[in-house]
Length: 129
Image (tube, one colour):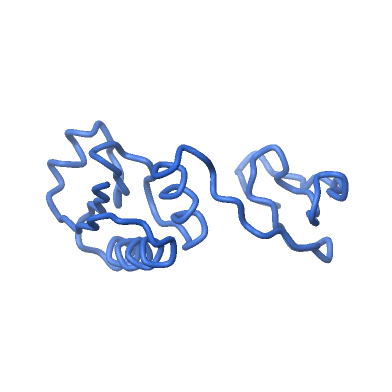
């Protein structure tokens, strides 16, 4: 597996590269991790933002990410399955579900203990005015 982080050389790009190397190491995946500042590669992929995380020449993430998200993306690309991460119960103010269908719910061991949280009101400007 060939993993590339392509960006302009900014701190966000370099951070994504370091997080990607850490994710590969923690997952124990055999992969070549490369960092490039060749913006033409991003354009060739049809992406107009940076940084780009690409696996085997295909963009899989644009922008910054956290270690867990990067591990999930690499794991899914490596095995074809999403990485199963340990869930914990939340106090109600935390957001501990990463699955889109569970966004905004409290999570525990099984799906049966996810409880709907009150919906946050979002202003037309996109914020929580």
